Image 1 (cartoon, helix red, strand yellow):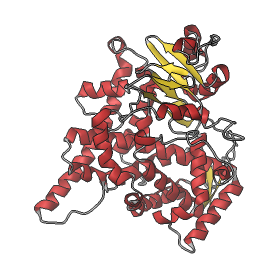
Image 2 (cartoon, helix red, strand yellow):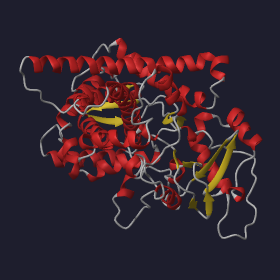
Image 3 (cartoon, rainbow, N blue to C red):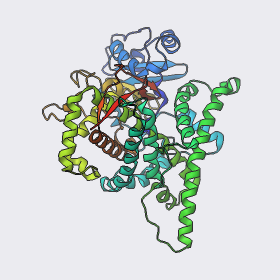
Image 4 (cartoon, rainbow, N blue to C red):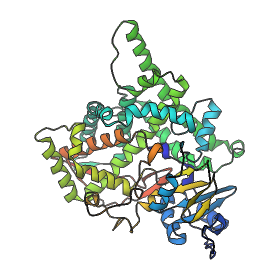
Length: 493
């Protein structure tokens, strides 16, 4: 999912309003487009809202300027689009090799260290070739179902961890911490087909450091992106911290890759048959350079942790506050299992309410609140404006997924809206995994892991809110995360 990560979430701020001039032409230019003054932009960037509230500033931008507006920050001009029909217009004109915004800081690091690009950082033919290889094992439903047994073993360890972490009253503090470990363990089993101890009673130091490196890297990403490269020498601390985080993440992935491939090579020498579906071995058989494999596996590891941890946290947070929906989901799961305690991947197709819960959570709390495109082949028309090629276009997904015109009561958790056959939603109104070729390569695996985890947690526990009654809102840390620690009560059934 993080392949949609981008720097263009930056310029979604409240600014001094400039307003659009009246137009006589049928097609307007960027000069006619409304947007902020530079001083207003800087005020919100530095003093008013700050980077953590970029998601809310999308909503404010729509209120002030309508569904399309522009922002200039130095030499960078960004067009913001916040209406489903207009987002569809952009994506239908993106060409054969869709291009995201330039993840400049991530690419700068790879150039600095001599690493290759992965799925999150590559473009064009390079990106297309690797995505095509991975799609065979990550997007085909039958291929994904094969990971069900392995992922269920990780879910079992998560359940045991929750039992261990419960206070006498059932309270588990900071559930995201456990879910981060769960997410890393899950994606590791898919990539390496081996366990790395994230959910053990004593978590390995290197695992803790890897997760901390991810957290710090995301915080630093936005800061590094607004700094010109020449500032890295004048203010080296931020750049050095950013590089140290990536250094550790690459070393962590490389160590596990090398360990597994060495073990497989020894089996071949001994004449043993190699079985398994883990992706690192699959990539190693394609002829890709090892540097390309290291980069792709590292980026997949980074992508898998936040997606699972935050979505699972929000899902249980909302279910705890809506006990009637929680009870309905549990009833649905138990009815499908018919006496079994562990659901299989194939069971999920018979659990529409469970799937609707996850869909509704991702509408309210999309992991990537905004992504972007750069149309390089030609000028395009969007919402009556002619947008020149190579213009950075921000797609404001947080705003569209909370548009009252598309989703009645948009700020309320209502999973049944996805089950109402008479209530149609625009297909581009809520696209948390992206659309088309640039959609999240790990979507099906992430969804399966979430379905298995939620269903089994509800079988084992009644999930209740924090007795302190703490209300939690989302904030932007490059990805969308809870602004406060989420703690919940897990009462044994």
